[in-house]
Length: 451
Image (cartoon, rainbow, N blue to C red):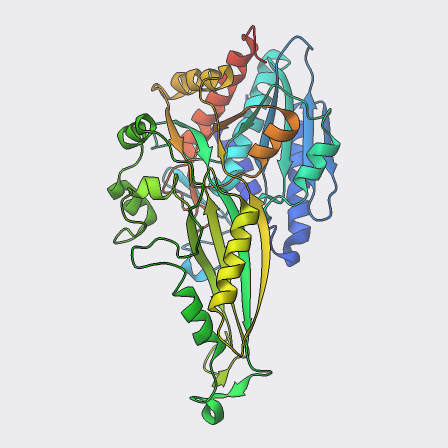
């Protein structure tokens, strides 16, 4: 059997490939990462491995068919990562992963390379030990999740028979704590908007025109400042219409087993909490929608000063949706609100991307029970059920196209700093994750009724 040192060496190699899907200059690196992953799957013993070409980045597929009488499990993950900037905030090189205590640090360590590799290594161990996995296996690993999976739905639709399965497994979520596993049963939806405010025809000398020209940066700032009301609710008219909230029993469960305000603030590394009045931090991040300005850019960004008034300013916005909300409707509402706020003399352009619906998964199916028992065997404690504020677009695709339930079997920790500098993954849970995945496949193989 491979040793822990071999596993860590392979994980470091995986993380070291800068597979940033959003950066056109990294396209070759993303392709390199797909090839590396395909080799891993072949070495693990899967029978058929191929890379599907898309309009952008490859999607890696592999399978191992054992017997038609056995359940078929489809493992999904993504090998692409977020940009590492700002690089000055990293304590080590983001694509030169280092081991610090029990953690491996590098871009993609938690989201999603360690979690993806957990299942590849579990499959490899089962094949090495028994000659074959205990269930039929399919793997689908994409390189575009961090940019909204633009080519995934078409591929799943076109390969519906190839990808047919009884359940899907995704490990791209958090545990509650290092020794407290959790199964995620709810995800928020998402919508990205990029708005650019165009002002005067050209950049202007601030000495000649300062105080006489309405600066696009100031106008954009004034628009942004009106996105939220004084009570921190989103100010867009109709934004909260139709929202479906959980009942009292579920809220009580959330209060009992979810992270408290202190834990949420500590995980965020902030001095205080902020948000919609009347809700806990956990509720704000999971059962309530949100609007976040994620980027603002305008004018000269280099060293020193350039005393000019720019002719345009841009902001990027991320909206998180909850059940009862639709991305298309929120796009329409937000566009109307921005147009209303845009002052005379300016032209606004808005680009929308990455729409994804929210999802709530049933917690009573046999595959979730198999996962719960697997967690208990590996960690020694029963998992709890958690809502997540994140978005995984493929969950709804699997439900709509493959009619397959999803198990969100995460191994990351709340303080892993996904999407941020110094992203990390707790290595003891890499090993326990492999044990959990092995036990899950063994549990599923013994199910007599699984559809």
